[in-house]
Image (cartoon, rainbow, N blue to C red; front, side, top):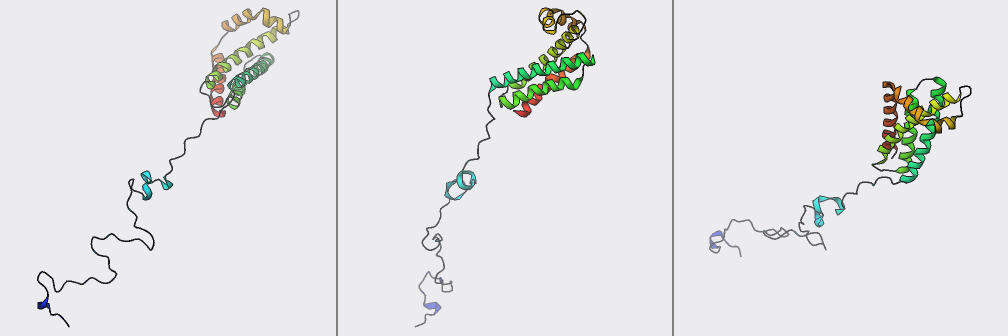
Length: 200
């Protein structure tokens, strides 16, 4: 039997739309798919409580550690190469009777290569490279002067001059020190520092 609008119960809207079958009711949370409960929002703004919305919830990887090495072996090798470079420097100085800038750089480069490759990442080694670079050029000058005197007629041998007259050679180098000498010292020290950092 049909019901007319004036026959509705008081307080009811006779023209209100009737709920359709299958439509969600007001105030009822939407249901998930078959067999799955509805997901609740989690702290952090991402499903499953992943902080900061990071995918998978994993923190970023740590920065890579510096390369390790043998500092003592690096210094020993650098000293040996410094002596070799100083001998070559002195021989060229004696033969050419002049200093050549790239030879000073080569001495520092040998030192930096040994320190960087063998010593690994060590903040002290570049400064060791500076000291050995300066010392390498100084010894090269000493060796060059000793070789030149050893070639004079009646002069003692190279090692005798080097050991017994080292003070005289050092005084002569100090008295004849020029601006170009400071430049060669700087080139060798800078090469020792920079190449140690580059190869470490």
